[in-house]
Image 1: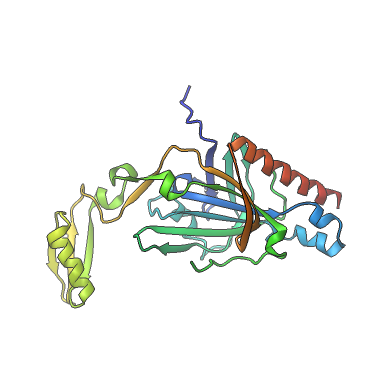
Image 2: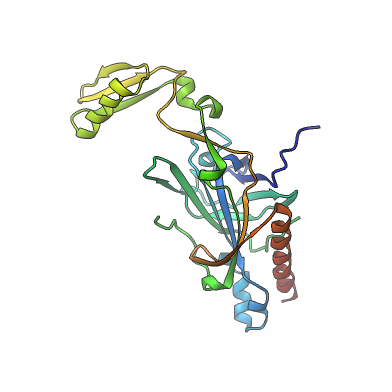
Length: 136
Length: 146
């Protein structure tokens, strides 16, 4: 049996523009997943607000990491095609043996060189298919 | 840092909740050698072109010749530049890092990328996933009900 590291966060992979998942966890320093705060915020108000909840921009994701220009798999291999392609990318997170795999439309791939010489990137995105992502 | 291009959320920041997994560089990564990360410059060699007509170029060339400690072959270009060709199997000029096998931080906070309040850290991945899954299920159920 393979040795288990015991780390809860085990997988983060994002599809390349060709639809091939690439495991890029090693390049990622953090990810944020913003979701509507609570059902109570939307159930008691008018219908148009409820419809707004269903719109794509109400769920957003931001991946941050360190620049890695290596060939596949690497974050740069995945996100360098963000400016030149408009494809939804399956973004799969496995934490504590549970999986969340939303379809995400990434809108930018921003690189920043810091004073200390480190080169970091940010890739924000929104849900692409309007389905509320749930853990399985 | 300038914000990257994003789709602006429809509701204000307080209407959102953010689930994060964080492995900060300072605490969750270590410096690695070129060999550890299969650095292409290390494996195949590389060239660096500097323009010695500028002050920056002069400083770069001075560093390569006297301080870098790398092996190189030097060639003057017609346009005034200098090409330094570095053979393989020596450290490149970048600093690589690799993740430490350390549990990341599992955080929940109010707000989104525009601003946040009340950050809370879960002790372990199970609790964070449970919190996140319960939250998402509530929203999915509410939407199904209409």
